[in-house]
Structure formats: structure tokens, C-alpha cells
Length: 112
Length: 117
Image 1 (spheres, rainbow over the protein chains, first blue to last red):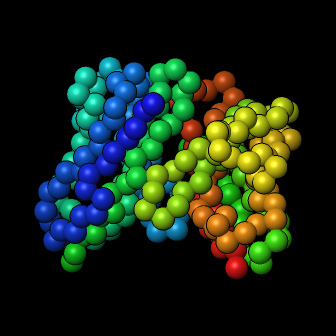
Image 2: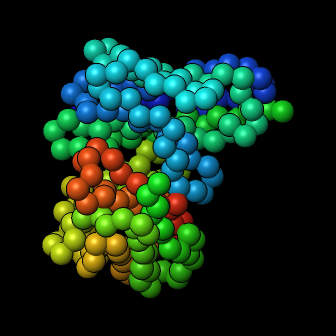
């Protein structure tokens, strides 16, 4: 059974710092991995999607990497801003049935 | 991009009443819609998968008589929480897969926060 773990559960850093969020998964038979952003009481915004054959994806100040063999992904946020404060979720799409399996998220607070 | 509208965004109800949540794909046809539940500080858990015109497939542990799902058209799926109780209070999110599109892509609604008193 696929399990997705995100560490840390919460993170608070000063504005301007670079930071890394971690996601690990137990079953490497994934179709892709996605990073989402969730604002309090709101839905989900897809940030980056990495196909299983890819190593990384970049969008603006965000860079996501994928090491499928070790079951790990990282989301790198450069020059953090208060507007980056949100909960960041990672989810893997299973190869077998295209179901999304979610991590519990990392709550990020960027202090001005 | 594809837009999924979820309504209401927040609902408070008394214990024992039923609540209906709507999920609409605004600019595409969705053959498949998904309903998720999220407890505070926990991951999203898939409750059920609904296919247009057929019965929903429920995940293990989800009571189908408690959470009624109807997907009567290619743009609308509804989740009805019947005889709601405080333990049903949660954040419910729907997503939709576009007809003919890649199976790995889902578009998400903004979610519905349900509070049962």
C-alpha cells in the first residue's frame, strides 16, 4: 500500500530565505508526482507536476525534484515571500489505477 | 484552464439534517469526478469515484448510504451527507477528470467546509 509522508509538518522561516520541503513515498510504481498549494479553508492549486521519467520541474521560484528509485521528492522555494505562506501538499499518481495518494502536507509560514 | 466550481464553500447544519454539496465542471465535460475528505492536519482521503450515468465506487470504510453521490450529467456531481453528525464535520473537496483527457489529470474544486452542530 502506497504511503506518502511529508516532513516537516510545519515550517516557519524569515522572508527571503531559500527552503526545501520533503516528500517521500513507499511504492516507486508511480505515474507522476505533483506538488499543490492549499490556502486556509480553500481548495488546491497545482504547482508542479513531474512525470515518473523526469528528474525535476521548475516554475518561477519553485523547483521540484524527483528521485523515483529512492522514493523522494523535494520542493525548493527560492527567496521566500510572505505570500508563499500556505500548506504544501504532495501527491503521487499510482501507475496502476491513476489514483492520487496524498501526503498530509507541510504548513509553511514566511515571516515578514 | 479547466475550472471546477464547488458549492457551497461553507455550510453549518444541525445534527440529523442532510447537506448537499455540488461539484460542477464549468468549461469541460467530466466523465469522472472524485470526492475527497480532509480532516485538519491530515491528508486528503479519497471517498468515492463517480462516473457519469453509473453508480459511484466507494473506498473501503466509506458508507455509501451515508454519503450519497449522484453524477447525473457530464458537468455535475453531487455529494449528499445524510443525517449529518458532528463527526462528519470536515473539509470536502471534489475533483474532475476531463472526458478524453489524460487519466492522470484532475482539476480540483475549492472545497466545502462542513460544520455539524
